[in-house]
Image (cartoon, rainbow, N blue to C red; front, side):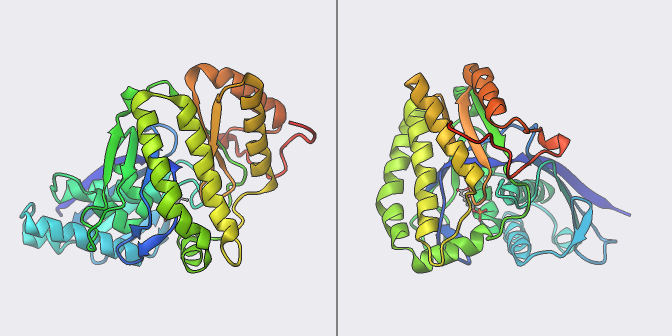
Length: 341
Ligand code: PMV
């Protein structure tokens, strides 16, 4: 029995200028460009094995040890990969017809607003490209699976270009700086709640596009400005601008969620407590030491510089005494110390 298989690993990415809203649902074309940092390959990754064989009778998928049905998005990605393989004649036609088995595992909570789909889809597309011998950029194919997944195809800080072509050909990811350009940048993830989010980013975005006037303003004026400032901050390693734009952009995205009708509340009182804590720390030091950002969930991602990690961690441990590492099963919606920050 012949089995061809590839195993790969891909990390999550954390957006500092956020994608929120699609102009084309089918092709996943965003209303605005976005920028994120890709984490390293240790803590928050998807690990995926894809295998094809003439003896497999059906396509099958296992996620975190459980068999799941294959989504429509998976079929779109597989079709796009096979089309590219066929055009470039990278694998013989017979093997393209073999059924596929996919086994994927996340080492962090799935669907909790921690970009699990980005890591999973990026990893899947990476493995499929290897399996079918496809060279070159496949971020546009990852985008078809889950928009933000295209940014996890590269390391360092990455921009997902908004693109102008109607077929999405130029809506791809490009690296702005590699990870070693700013090696002392660190990320702390505070898991406020590891449960599944109440409103998926897909449905949240749809309602925002339909109902929020603020989203038009954000996509046209706010984000282009943030993208320019962020590119400059990254190239010059200017942490002050980086931190301010990161926080303002997160606030702007969640303001759009509030402006959506009915409103979408991803942030909990603990998330708001973390926001106040970060501003108090930065005010106390009279400089930005740390920046928060929140995706479609209550969990905080904090960007900071390595040298400040001990100070910031001890402050966080003081204000959240019940905090635990994720491996220890720790998350608590009610964990913050009451009183002034
Ligand atoms: O790619 P999706 O559908 O998971 O959307 C991600 C949206 C945000 O995480 C909120 C923002 C972003 O740019 O990652």
